[in-house]
Length: 224
Ligand code: 6GU
Image (tube, rainbow, N blue to C red; front, side, top):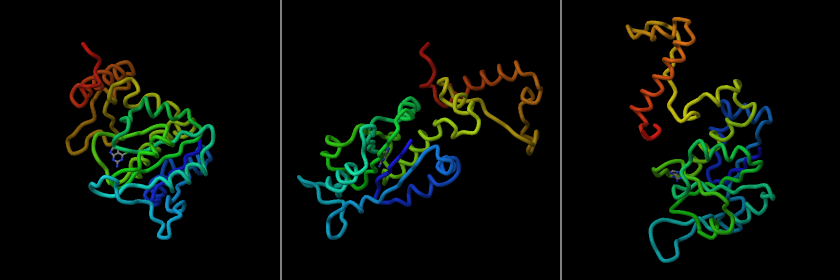
């Protein structure tokens, strides 16, 4: 998979995506991530990428020209052009899985009050929001989207089971986990986990998973 990220704050993406599991996935060639400064495609004397909104109103709007120039320079027949925007479809694991099947993602990071709507109509294939709250900058959302997609690519997680067994895969929250020591300040690891009894451990995990889902995410429980 190749991912091109277009932003006016490239360092907001290169830092976070260059480390840990996503950083290693890039080093081993499982994914290529290129972060581009949108100002490169501004023909404006001052490299401006924003302007005042028609019809008045608060803030500035991102201009069409640099975004069309950039996307037209990099897209192919296999590209999807994803706009990170709080007005997009709310991301969940099902949407993330859909994007793992795409060979080329171009991610546009919004900023300011918004983006000229001709970009949405003329270039964008998918509008994605990472949740119902507002960020200052789409680059932060692009990191989250990229991380969620790339970690599902074959070979990125060392243990192939990790992605399949984790939270949300079966629609429930995972059971809690523990490591040494068995007693920390009087807080003990549940006895069943150190019992070595695999069936009892599996039953305990199932019950804890249900209990924690009911407490934290009742919306995930199947209808009665
Ligand atoms: Cl994708 N961008 C911004 N600026 N805020 C958001 C978002 C995206 N998703 C949720 N809030």
